[in-house]
Length: 183
Image (cartoon, rainbow, N blue to C red):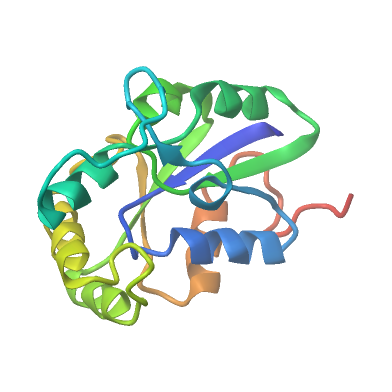
């Protein structure tokens, strides 16, 4: 979708969706991976899977996180389409290792544990991280950075969302200012 393509990753609650919405508000092209095409599947093969196989809620929370993937062929196709100056792909995918090399730059949003916990406490129970068990899982992952791309540009996401978007944009090559030309 873009001549330059960027991936914005991070754990639940760090602000990926908010940054995506701010970038869109500014006129940038954004792909919402979590909302647009993520599904439960085998992270190695991409084959869809329908059932969570474990008897306990805790095991199913872990299984769900580890099987939340993006369709690799669709990501490749979107990256190859260069009708836009740049595109931001936002969301988490357990199979990012299969397409991470397609991006010009990868960002990981980070947040201090206290702010993350407060954000998760405000989530409704039908949103991941809104239930106590999910929140505990997210906090454990946050402490270890497990399941996130290494060697990414780390962006602190505790600032106002406009400042976080500015920080992302400051790392995007060929950008003369913070706003793209209108198409």
